[in-house]
Image (cartoon, rainbow, N blue to C red; front, side, top):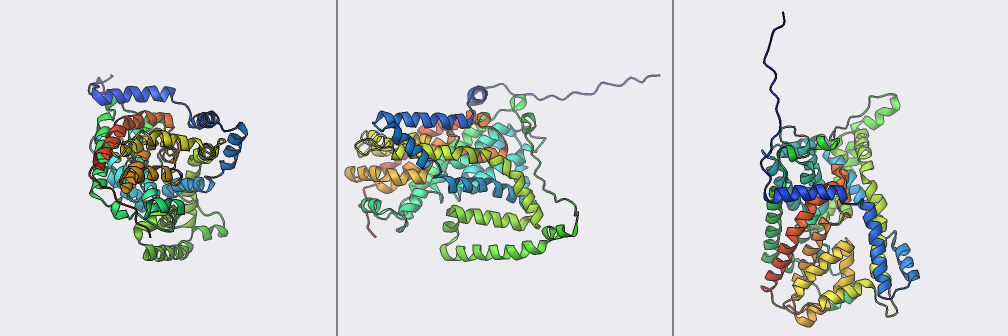
Length: 482
């Protein structure tokens, strides 16, 4: 006799009615996911656009081609650094101690919106110490949140919030290449030093106005993250997207006696002691903040910690190897971006002027004493879209900008901060800096750019106008020569 039982209860996800920014963000993200081109196609179009611009100002086709080819490998060392940002960060995060810390942080939020907002805050806060650290930390926090089966976090929105590590106030912190350059006598080119003199960090990073900017940008980003995060059945989790979030790294069983060396902790302890000795000496010489502001130093510290925390060489190697496929975009695309930058600044016409010179003149001539900070902010965003490399561009463009600042008696220190903070916003719509994060979260640009573009839409006017308003609290300071 068959016994009848009540049918099992089916649990389904429900979602609140779409309203406001959430509805707009979801529609826009879905549209961008369908229509946003591949990141490699974007950089190829950038080559054509900048090349056409160079031809328009009078550069010859041969000059454009020469500039592109000569500059193609200019970012080769930086490309390697970016690849190492991903693989060393992944290796560090997959070590047992760090993985446990990140997982404990990931259990804090109790709602999907709260989780995305927490990623936004963590990304902006940690990036003030070092943008590379912020990028890695945010990406791995997103992965940890993606492993939660009880929260149903939209993995796309969380990943986009993690991108605020390079698209938020990072360049207003200790990663500010422009501010650090002007505070270091040996780093400032002589022709620029004659215009600006030395500008200490006390006049750039460590001002109350800069703190206000950080608070405005961070709080705005967190609110946008919270308001735009999809909920319920509209959220697409890491499982929905087919992302592999297994970060466990296990060594194979020993096969032969020769394998024991790579599985012994003795080598890790001895080599790790040498690494820690170098780190201690460097920090003792220059201080912890200056030590980590150098990207090579930062990478060495992360690699050393990953090596030590994995305990055995074989586990460290397996963790690094597992991350290598995720850096293919960096390896392939960064040389083309270098070619774009070279055309922009070295393909000159008969007057010896490059496209970057005309762009600088166009924007700077629009401003006076009161308008220059506003124009510099807008100009910085535009240039950041074309060439996403704040430090390299600043050395080329600073003579024009700072020369204009001296002519109209605008505060040079605040113009440095305006340029740095506004330039970072362009990263939200430029796939250049997105590639390392995409390697960590294992998504495509089209899957998160809809959300990052919304950050840009709101943060760009808020940031530029706040920089401009705060510029009225500064007075002109004559250059101080060393």
